[in-house]
Image (cartoon, rainbow, N blue to C red; front, side):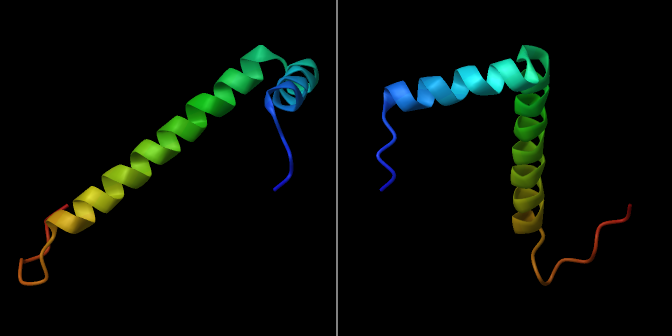
Length: 58
């Protein structure tokens, strides 16, 4: 669709590293991973709750 190949992606990655630095990019990756993990956990917890079950005490 956009015609992005490996060379273009590498150039974008180098520009991001120059702008933000490696530590900030690592922090963004960590935050994204935690967000995905929490989302999956929330979906799993919701699936375990059946409509006929009483609500869990928190």
